[in-house]
Figure 1 (tube, rainbow, N blue to C red):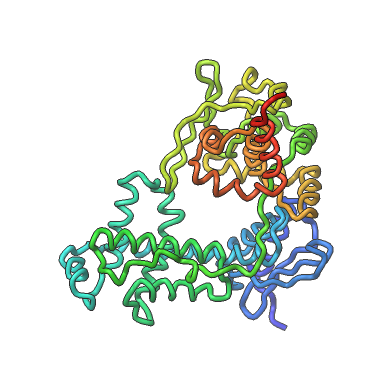
Figure 2 (cartoon, rainbow, N blue to C red):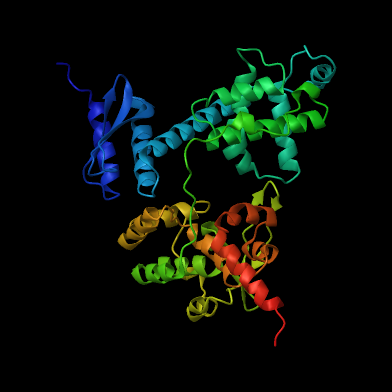
Length: 429
């Protein structure tokens, strides 16, 4: 029997050590399966069923860190309530995006200059070659120059998707118009209709084509159809929607957080409906607490805003957050990773884990953003504040607000709103 390579032993041991740091002492191991890394999970350590799941990595010595980090990512996702199969699928998508990003970076390092004459010819002669790398560079310049996105957003979201566009247009088959390009991209996720990665790839590709046609850099056949649902597909799986956290659960979590720094941070999240990242951008200005965070999105850039407690939240008023605010009271968090740091801390709290299981048993999903969702829910249901007002208080557009929070407007909420309106409009006496 051939001896086991030293790197094989190091890989298995590295995975076990990384998992033990997260409290997993047994039940999760990796092995080689026909040249691929395979994850073994016992029934007791998983979802009640023994699982053997292939990871998107070759079983090779240079993949030691990637396999270890991949297993940890699946473990963390599973303990955040994500099904194991979905966690593996998301890991595969993340790896595909990272590979595409590296490919795009390699392409960007190659000297290539956009040739306007070639582009102009492409607009008049459909058979002429299109300088796709040059087209994408001009699109990047447009997005950054207009202020629609930040450079980091391009690197994180746009570049891997534009790299896939470049790969697709090289063929085979030969791509001659928008429909063929979108269909070719959809085919890469033919077994996962409606998944987030497929949807975003189609949307980003369509946006590129739409802009290029509007700038007369591409001809009419490259204009994408207004309706993209046939390319995105329809998911066959029911998606669990994250849930607003209830007030009694907020108070219970606060009581069980031992570290005063994280407790203070959790109180701020719940009381003001903050994004976790915004904790690092709070300032006292003229007796008011302000959030100075500026988020750049497709609908524009958010502005600094004063924070407001909801009139219905007497419990938040009693915390005296404004009177006692001091940035030094907050825990250290790496810039850009506030949500990740906070989520990891809460996942180590037994009460938070039990609470998540209770929500899951009711068909709901409790996450860190549930604190922000709870603020929006109370603002509408208990305070009767209109969406425009709540959106401004939370630092996003009305469109974003309605898209994100209208999902919790069930029949009970509608009935209650109608009853309150009837009381206001019914003449006295």
